Amino acid sequence: MSEWLLEAKGITKVYGTVVKTSALKGVDLGFKVGEFASIIGYSGSGKTTLLNILGTLDRPTEGSLWFQEEEVSKMNDNRLAAFRNKNIGFVFQFHHLLPEFTALENVLIPTWIEAKSGSLKKQDKAKELLELVGLSDQMNNRSTDLSGGQQQRVAIARALINEPALILADEPTGNLDSETTDQVYGVIREINQRLGTAFLVVTHNDHIAAKSDRVIEMKDGLIERDYLTSELNEEDNWKAVAPKHCKYCFNDLEEARSALL
Image (cartoon, rainbow, N blue to C red; front, side, top):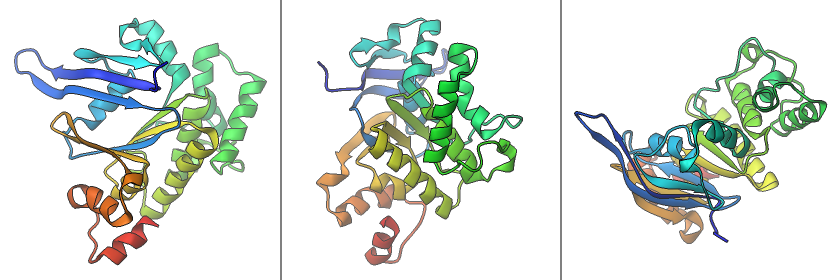
């Protein structure tokens, strides 16, 4: 049996027909059950393109994608949509909640796609998830009555409703202030540890990357570096992430260390 939950083999992505642009140039990458990893890199390095392919929102030009030893890249569109709804959850920079629905109803939407109607069991599950993300007292409020951080937490609960093995998050804290970012990070970390859900987070936030279990650095459509943060001491871990990708500048190492806490 393969050790990988999700594995990409030789993934390339080329856009255009006359003028071709290679966004990915032969990426090999695997993720294990319960892993918490971050993808970092400059804009245009291929991070979001890779995330879309890993999440089956897009197809590679060449290469294959495997989920628990099944080649999902060969599935037709209908089968792929059903696979995606069941096995992968998504959290984006913009929460994409439906404004006319309550927090509880927004969380339940993926179950309606699957079953065409709600169920008491799923409603109980949605309430549990909203409690997990700290919104048990907000579940009947419309999404427009929630703060940005609360809306993003609803999006996290929605991503979990079908109990996926993997959550893909594209800049999930990109629109949030630093305090709310820490709160949202704390929520997804708790979910990772309590439920064993794997997380793959594309981020420009060096604080989140440095606190991940694994960091994957991309450049020009390739993986330039892939390492476990546990293999580095605190100072080396910070230096590995911050110099090239830091959005915040610190005057000394002590100030940087405090930001990681």
